Amino acid sequence: MVHCYKLGGLNIVLDICSGSVHVVDEVAYDVIEAYETTDHEQIIKDMLVKYGDREDVTREELEECLAQIGELKEAGQLFTPDTFEPVADTLKQKTAGVVKALCLHIAHTCNLNCAYCFASQGKYQGERAMMSLEVGKRALDFLIENSGSRTNLEVDFFGGEPLMNFDVVKELVAYAREREKEAGKNFRFTLTTNGVLIDDDVIDFANREMSNVVLSLDGRKEIHDRYRVDYAGNGSWEKIVPKFQKMVEAREGKNYYMRGTFTHANPDFLKDIEEMLSLGFTELSMEPVVCAPDDPSALTEEDLPIVLEQYEKLAELMLERHRAGKPFTFYHYMIDLKGGPCIYKRVSGCGSGTEYMAVTPWGDLYPCHQFVGDEKFCLGNIWDGVTNTAIQNEFMACNVYARPECRDCWAKLYCSGGCAANAYHATGAITGIYSYGCTLFRKRMECAIMLEAAKTLDEDDE
Image (cartoon, rainbow, N blue to C red; front, side):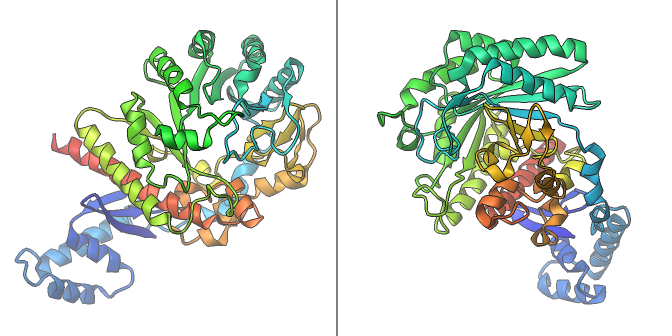
């Protein structure tokens, strides 16, 4: 299977199963599109008619083009057959029972009252609560005990707003540093925060202990303050932006992400990215809102062409700034065309419910933060481990080939079947398809591949 598309002035051919990317001229593009479905002699005739006014398009040139395509096919760089499906069901079995990452819900409460919050203002459909030091320690012990031979372990301090329980965060990091020495493990910590409680102590601690910080900012002040308000209805933009700038400066502009959410109110989210850039932030992410279809903030079909155009314009802006020596990162355009994720990840996905779990303040285990509060997805707890094996088996069987709709999708080995939580909330099944999200993802991948291809061509011309 190949995917052919034109973007950014380039004719791009992506070989799905090998990951090979080819930037070709217009004639080769047309020949490749017809190569598997049309008799080769007929292709030559069709091309001679289509390009009859071009002296460089001759029978000899077309025969040479067909021969080169055949060589690439033989080399496994074009029309590569899909050989991954037979092993898809066995890949996760190889790491069954091994947990590598936890999302610690250190605080089921928040000091903001964001209207679009999937976690119902941090409560996750339940009671407000703070994780105790004892529960947190047991969660870290659970991770160590169930990490098998893995050395590197990941923990995300999440909420709600985790800085509302900052003392416990600090004590848990200290405990982990003690345990990792004796257990032969390395902990990597991430903190996700709305920024309201950031102060010098938080900045100093984060710089010492957090491999990454995720900072919530929706871009333009009027957009951010529309949804991200406190309980008195006041916007938070002016309060948090100076704190974010101070934290990012202290981190020397590295190991952070500004994470924004775009909604029906701002499908033109490129303006929000440009605002973040003007504020000095260069590590950026803008996520489509996750909410019920009837929510006022939900993206609509009318928003879709606007959003797709924004992704293309974003790629153009990134290339322009890259060439000007002022690059910035957009999370969804981070793609490695030379290495990239291994086939295990490409087929199996994020590992939610198997390698990765969320822990509530009470020590209950869920497949990920987006399932917390839905009791049927409770996997067990940090003392008894996974006891709801039926649900875990569903996640174990969740891979790109578990979704019939994915089989013929060119982007399947980039999205790995997509987000199980988004699928569940859209269709009622973790193996369902969130079609709106699929459309956005495919456009992001086209833009990301075009961007990297253009950068590579620039390097070759130097």
